[in-house]
Length: 187
Image: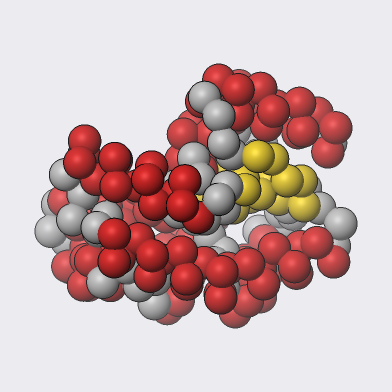
């Protein structure tokens, strides 16, 4: 499974809940990058430059990380990707990775939300979490990147008939209820 949506749409929160309820491993590229930044690993230092500017970490770094992660034993019974793929070239790379590991995507869950609501959410999160990558200019830049680069990814999966859309506005529990209902229908 893949969860996709604009920054601030609740992907991470919902991914954790889906993972817990369905018993599948959640794989978040953002969490992996932030962990590396915190530990100041070479990958983290490289990723931080892009993250602080609101840009995507280059495909070469991201693809290598996802390829390694999806080769692990714990994904054989199911997985949930959060934050990947974000570009059309990453869709092609993920197709190759899945084919090599004899895996497949069953559903792409798209969380939707209004941009102004997302800006409000992300500014609030930045204040609470002290995240350097969440100021209004960077947030709007990231939303622009999402609309320009990631939205076409959804179109690719729409063509395959595996996209399920869920409104990401509401309380966490309300969104989770909508997500779980949508996933039951999608299976």
